[in-house]
Length: 319
Image (cartoon, rainbow, N blue to C red; front, side):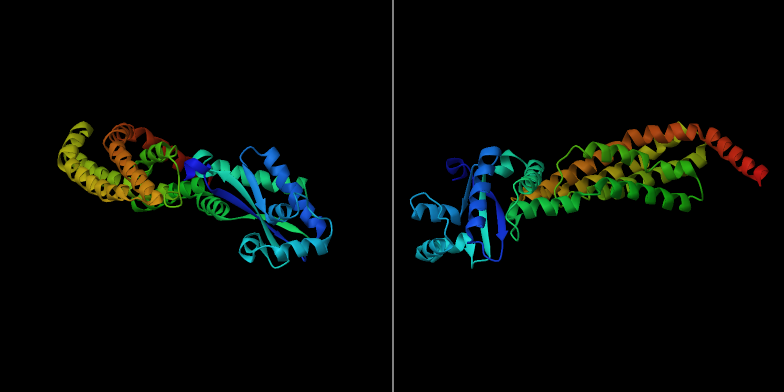
């Protein structure tokens, strides 16, 4: 049906006044609807009580309030109730065709903001208000509210994890940084994916799951390093002892979230797909980027220790 009739997505313009049947208000609704149709390529048509009045009056909008009221009263109530609620509220239905699939959520949000500008440029008469409403407006508002501040939330999570690890490891900057840095890469990779209300806070999920894998491997590495004092050998033993366990734990999480991909509900399906990719990226990072980073930073521990000692001595001299 959508392919045949070019879709049914729409934005509803809610018009409110003491009396929307006033000729000046009616004239504005008629003119503004025509303006949107002519100036906005995304708007395929406008429908309101004006269309019904014109159809019943030979295509002409009356300039007399009494005549307008008489025409409205003569129309079937089932038709009038779709576009008029009493005499103080009316709607203009803006047809957008297949807006969600063609335009996308971001373009719809931009269109709504452009319509706001159009209302400011083509203002209604004094005492009359007009604002957008409908499913598309609610959807973009909710998604915007959920996704706004996503970067700030992720950065805050990274900082909090670093602070907690710094406290647990008693000021060891290397151990506190190691689980956090690889997750920055994973979050960056995931940034190119489409976000929905369920996946908007996925950065925190990635940070929690990925840091856990990294911390487990790091603890085993330092335990083995204390026994053999050789970083490369300690890493080989760590990979052999804990690698399969981490892989098994990660894959169970992958297949657990993977079941959501079978859902026919788009948001749940999208969340399952993004969560699976996030866990896979976290596992790959743990066994690749994290391993190299851990070896590099441990081999340079003496440099970090010297810098830390120099800073401490400088503070003492200053005091």
